[in-house]
Length: 247
Image (tube, rainbow, N blue to C red; front, side, top):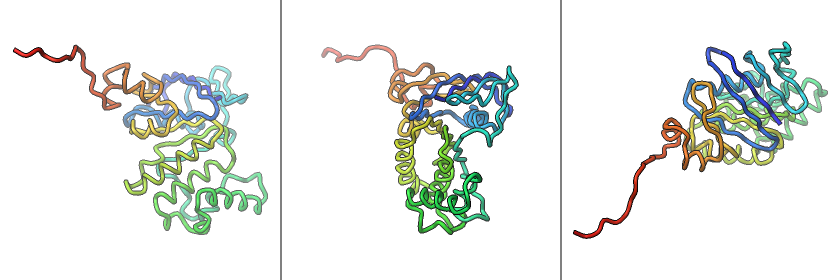
């Protein structure tokens, strides 16, 4: 279980976020640019500071009142960045193995190749990121995020850097990962259709606050505000409809 309670300014965004996310569930956090989506991920991962509390399972990652702040490397987070942030000077397998410092070198390579095989990327294990396609870079980034068997998976717009042709297959890959991942996942997107496909639930965020959360169909059919109605692209009309009797 991931528990987040943040109510502070972070990275020039005013956050007022409370959420619980159980293991094996994916919450798609959807909203426009500047709503605070990425800032929230960074606060959970520890790469941005905020006041509040973050608890993952039995581990306390943040408690500003008690002056507890676990460093990013102390938090068991798998993070896929929007641009994937692969190291350009390292091969695909070395990118995946980068965070496995606690393992011997041979075991690091074996773990990296195991994950690359899972994503159908064994034949590109020695390739540098610049020679990989967008979909291949995404799969390497996912493999790297999963390499340390994280307690939480954080995905920041994982499909936005892809062209339309690549996005379909990359979405299928991501769907499979989310079905198999046993820990909580928080996925950030600006696309409601993407959120509804990938998330078990969708949370709409505006100005650093979650204004509605639930199944995608519920948000679309019963939006809590005009903003949610607009974001889910639903036209809401009031009144009655019926057949007019002939004159």
